[in-house]
Length: 225
Image 1: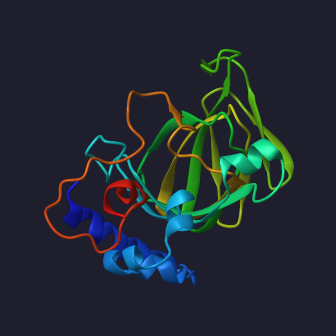
Image 2: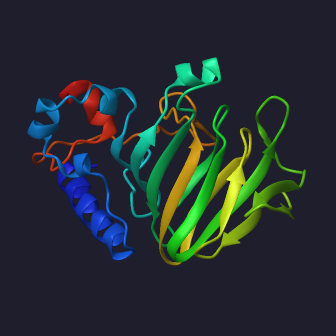
């Protein structure tokens, strides 16, 4: 993706979030130089901040996701079973924009539709080896109530509804009838190692630097902070 396109998506996404009465934390709006000058060690270590991905496929409008990680624990907390064991993200799934089929080995997550269109999820269970089980029904919790769909079935969440996904639950999702504001509440999030995709794709975008970044993305941190 070109940096100019990423900058444009950041501005559009922030406006959409604000239109639903949500304001991101102050560090979200720091220019790169201010972030570098601040004590950013925990922001970097916990990979908090902006995340715009097209999964390396260069087709953001068709397959992509807008994310902002507001808080995140550490894997060391999980291993100890105490401390900051949770994470939170704000996401935007655009109308008909696919977030491709994937699962997590560690993360359990609540995916909450906070406004906009319907959030559509395609669901599969896992086989014992972690591969997609294309025959078994899938049962998930929707706002505390068990709901079962067939393998590859679609779960549609209206604004205010949420689904709980456990490690091993294969899922893809997209907006329907409009862009969707999503909040994800989960156990500690590790985007470097804990995303297993059905397709051979990457988690992050390849960036072409055609202009300066307005804000750094989490995948900029290692090179630019």
